[in-house]
Length: 70
Image (cartoon, rainbow, N blue to C red; front, side, top):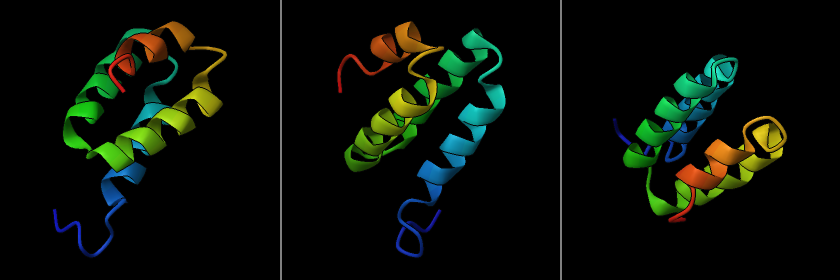
């Protein structure tokens, strides 16, 4: 993927996936962990903020666990 065209394209893709799998907590956690391996630090921080706003009330434990290092 050429990140110079749209440096946050991967981040937007990850957000789309997380919304689609948010109905299943195990799948959500799996996709979030996968996403954290493919994003750069800036994107991870933005994803963290977005996830806590969007899923903080429903998936807080998974978010805390996955973002522990960030």
